[in-house]
Image 1 (cartoon, rainbow, N blue to C red):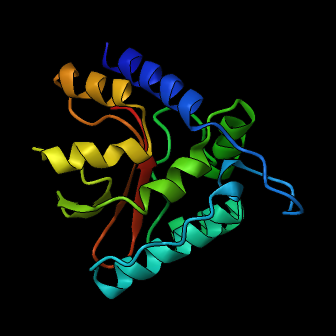
Image 2: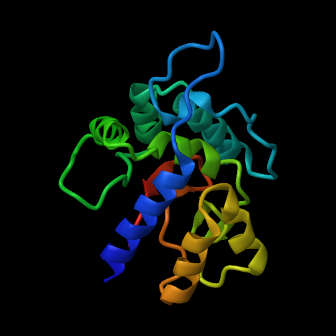
Length: 179
């Protein structure tokens, strides 16, 4: 049931996020993040976390899957990106994008949401913690329609959407959705 809820939430959210085409003479979109124009907002983070966050944001905004994989392996041995059998994050993200799931758009938008400290990680969005606040849930409107947010809240599971986790030393550990 949890997996089915996560899939339903992802489908609804993908439909609402969409992948807009670039305006005017802008370069052709190569992924869903290429049309996100909001700059990365400053956040009070330790320097290694802030640096990794900015690097992830830049690479995802450029749709540079290889750079994202390098960032994931910079301080550790990989990244949790899927609960499936896929071994290559870059391949997985490309396939998801081709299927219409705007994973790169989620990634760049997540990094502009409030963060929280949870289980040794800096996590985006802040709703991915044991007891999310009203403000945590409200911040999700940048990613999901209210209907999807309400479904997550009522599920009893908590936030099960896309999330990013970075250790205090700047080690990027996860970018996943679901449970």
